[in-house]
Length: 115
Figure 1: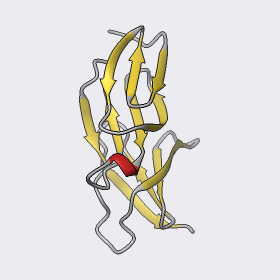
Figure 2: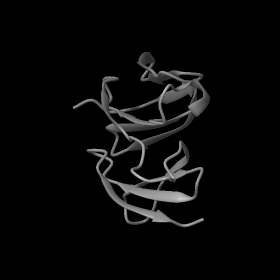
Figure 3: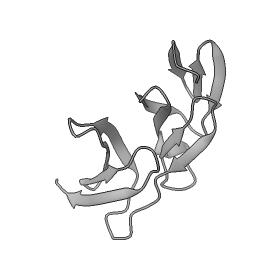
Figure 4: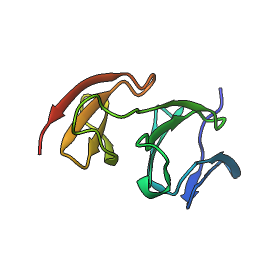
């Protein structure tokens, strides 16, 4: 199984172990690596045609999933991503909605307006 020994990102590229593995569709704002296999990117919404600005890639650079827009009026682009002590991935959007996700599948487990 491959592992990540080095990872850098610049503009819209992620360089893993010295190779340009990921070319994202917009500028990368934030990058998280989970379980040495999942590379979660928060992309600049200004470069996106849709509001799906949180993407997950595998170590080979293949897109695994992207968070879609939420199903209610507070559906806007995401401004931060983070992992809490419960080891789930969270995304926070500009309208104050926190989304709890399964980082392996991108499934939305919970949404909560916390603003």
